[in-house]
Length: 77
Image (cartoon, rainbow, N blue to C red; front, side, top):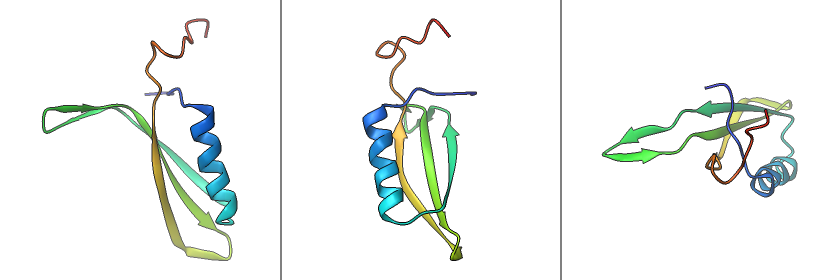
């Protein structure tokens, strides 16, 4: 997986939380959709924050689910 489409309002919420928590760096991981217990999980983006002043403390944030391709038409890309 090279990319996924995320909702800008949802992404802004994550950025606001990172800012409020005074996070200096964030690792973004793209997770492919998966099948668990017969359910199909959509692709998502996971966020882990790090403060430069506390490099031993990593903070996990909520994942954002990808927007279904039918909802976001990126066919021009």
